[in-house]
Image 1 (cartoon, rainbow, N blue to C red):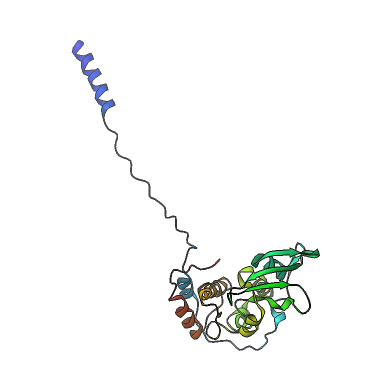
Image 2: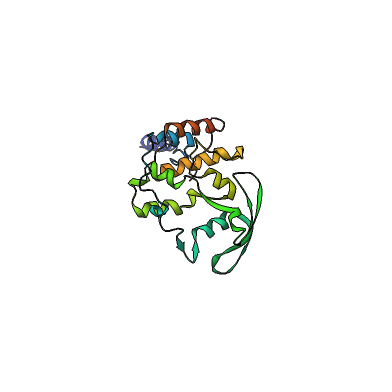
Length: 221
């Protein structure tokens, strides 16, 4: 009887001392977002085609000017976003401010007025006529208006530089401020990807040349 009890106690102690089986290590999920892509990889995802005819293009194909929300139109919102030291007036109007211009690299003092407001203009990074010829004709009117008012597509910039750019793409015009070219091209690529637009062969080649000096440039969102 005593032997039986001792055996039972020994068996219980042995079970308590056993090392439990090792559990499988949980799979570590990657912290890299699927949206964290390089501009080059997004560029490679875009279709490459020739330009469609410009027939039918008009600014009104992208809405009747700037849209208004909460009392502010798109132009005023971009001025507020891109300038510093802004002074606001009635009706959400930016009366003055300072722009660190990305296209030229110079500082521009903005003062609202008939003869002065044009010193700072809002550029459509992908020119609307270029968008029209690279797929926007297939978008709905609402989608085109959204494109023309999308903050991703818009930058406050030096007026003369914007006029010089006109409706050029990356193959025909790049910002004189060379350090900004990578961001500029990455933003064009992001816009084209978002609105399912294509690039021409010459445009893609020009973008690749720019991004060759900054292959780590992330796609802008």
